[in-house]
Length: 251
Image (tube, rainbow, N blue to C red; front, side, top):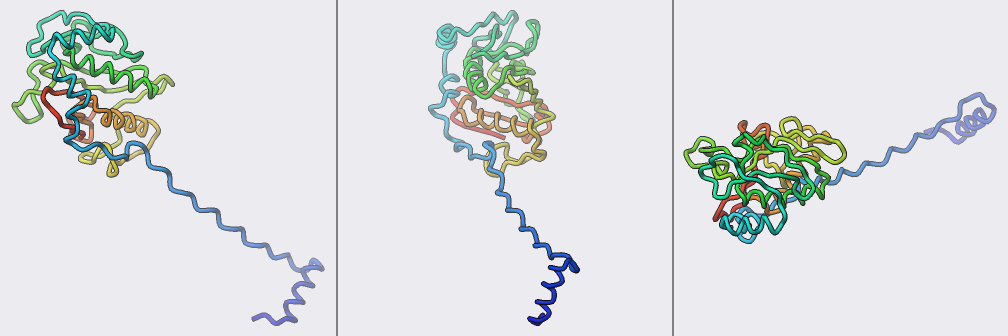
């Protein structure tokens, strides 16, 4: 312990300029608060939660009922232009939906055909996406004749024109979102909810994940599959509606 006399001596030497003034230690920087959780980490509705959802209502419409609602909404469509076995009310989109342009395979491609009921679901999807700054949806396919579920003989909803595979989005800001590059999620991990993770939280990855999980919560579709589900979906998001289904399945 320094004696009182030594302390006085040090102070005198500092005052005379013979000893440098002792600098005070700078305070520690304040601890940064953890970043708030992203919207995609919010819980999803229970799996059996869609008995009164839009997806369930639309999937149950008859061809006549669907066409009447299509006209009521003013959705522009045109004939499929080719045989579409398995599709109850086949057509092609012929204009934007709620201001969002759905870029689909060309007029000669079978993959650009969809059922009237899916057109109504995409119309409501367009409204949701427009509110989140989406200008375009890039579609790989909708109708795939005789498509089967992976590893099974059971028909996929693609075989009825009731499913859409989306590989990207263009935002009104000019930003492009590509599912294969921007998904950034490990196989087998939940796409949405508290246990969901983005492996590389770049801006595009977080934007895409939040967008997808908003769609998953909307009740517009029964089954939503992502690159986190399996390698067959590594480059697209699968969305479908299914007649007599009450199930929300997000993988």
